[in-house]
Length: 118
Image 1 (cartoon, rainbow, N blue to C red):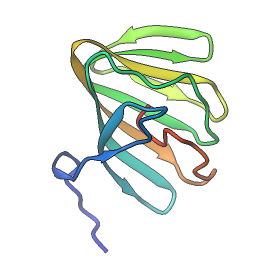
Image 2 (image 1 turned 90 degrees about the vertical axis):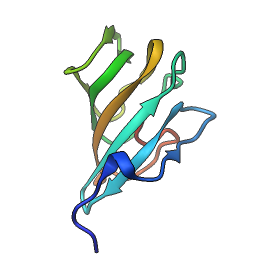
Image 3 (image 1 turned 30 degrees about the horizontal axis):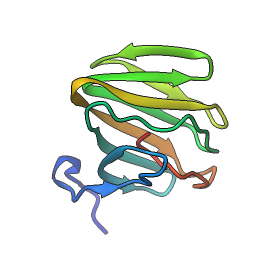
Image 4 (image 1 turned 120 degrees about the horizontal axis):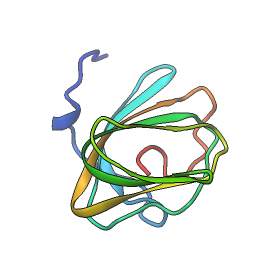
């Protein structure tokens, strides 16, 4: 089992395109999943919810984040917290797209169509 991973060099997985516009590499641990995802310019996820908690840390570009009733355009250095069962979506703003790091729990299951990258 490998314990050291280079997310930026991993093969990109494409998430469910019917709901989600993110793509990138991820690593599953026993209780936590981490991922480095890219969202192409002017793409967004549908407004949806899932049973796991997650955090999105913006590294490059800007994301329009909607979590519950709160909506903002955020850039590098901002953390978006998405509690379980809360409706949310993210979309890339501007011409550059966005790159972000995701961390989410695996304890609550994986019932979601846009798994990790919204």
